[in-house]
Image (cartoon, rainbow, N blue to C red; front, top):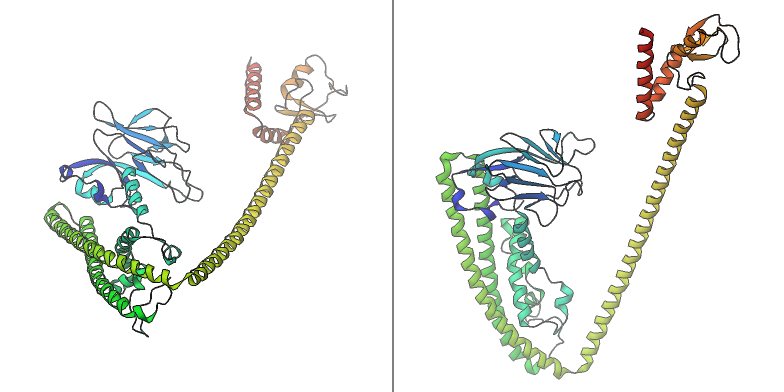
Length: 485
């Protein structure tokens, strides 16, 4: 859940607003802003993006639309969604506008198996802004903008940083800035007791390599060969300057992390207070929000100070890099060839590992496809068996359970003394002309109603098409009417 403060405006404070309150949850509410059209779906062009973790296709790309009519009444429309929109337990017709009122129940999609309620259920309500604010869901465009910012701060891999001469000072600056962002995130999982160790753990591998070795006391630079003793003193003086700058950078990072922890705690305290308090405690909320803003401004100032020190450190590292590049050229081409050969070996090893992973994935995909084909074949077999049973049942009804006089399924079946069966109405009409069996021509001495045969036919007809059912009901009504007259 994103921070609701992303779309807070000052003119709403103290007023009342319409929203869709998510049933049973204190988050994920949808704000209905006056004069704005609110669209809901799983696509990118909607106001609120709902992506189901249980069933991703439960919500359509543009599921429904909420807007106000000319009288100011809020309405809802199902935008041809796959699983539908339900208002007060009744499904809405697509592309038809319905009015919604206080207390109405809105359901998006249908419940899954073994669940009584759908995943997205809302209640239309009008609440105070202080009550709605902590529970609101972020809008889709704000989440996209936030994701873009996060993507620009992606972490560089160790393989990219290990190669000498692969990047310049301009790239180093962006990586150092990323260190300050990622270190704040790691504090949440490490706790307050690990604040002092966090900056050195999240630093760029090139920066941490500038620290002096515990055994020799001399700095070790990865990716570069050892230099001659002639340049040892000059190199030591340059590294001592970078160590001082690095130490200042660590101190600044620690202060920034502490400020981020304080800001996070203050933010959580504000959220808890807002959920537990009523209107009378609005002054306390405003005071805590002011403290939070002060911490944010202090954090921005510390970050600006850290940025200036990073620029200074970058300049020092640039000078050292130029000096080391000159030493590398003087040392000769043999070491470069060795490094190149080692890099090629690592590259081929990585390629072989990727090929093995590709083969494994292909084998898994083939196995899954085979299972899917077997499942489809089993379903087809079951469907064929079902159709065969229905066909056999139809044959039995048509050949064995039809009256020879009216060519219809028996209605109130009657069995004669000769064991032949007919409809009660049909044999009575036949006996008005002849008192003999229509099949074997034996004299009719007795008639017996066959309830078992009637029940069997009724159950079998219930599994047939609706046309057969309706035709049988019409025949029964007609024959009952003829008996009365």
